[in-house]
Image 1 (cartoon, rainbow, N blue to C red):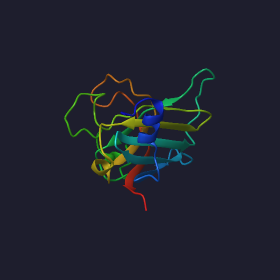
Image 2: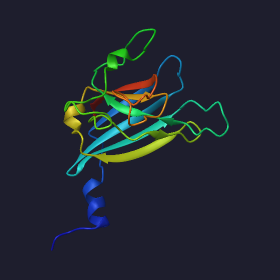
Image 3: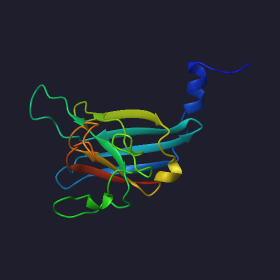
Image 4: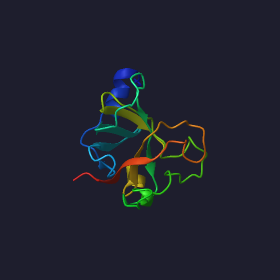
Length: 165
């Protein structure tokens, strides 16, 4: 009998110990920003789970901050005075697709008093294909339209994806 339904789906995507992680740290302007992005390869794709703390608070009472998060093609979280994570490169996009169909485009982080947690299943990449690449959190939400990066603003945090040991 073919298995289907929610229980089958849950068994297929259940993540044991992550295959890779990125420990994310904020730029000098955001020293309290940190988090852990984990990557778990499954038969159905990669489960990307994000746990982030210290996201900047909104300056206006009714603004609920949303932050873009992407995998970038660079291999380093270094940069310069203008862009502290310039060496993180552009969005990871091995297929040469238009935004928001880059392999590295991920759902946004919704801040909850400076904290965010999310989990997504994606088949846009494998864990192996993103090892050594960077994860970037941007100051603004991605508009999912503007080329090439969704008008997502400054890079405020970065981490390199490494094998989980």
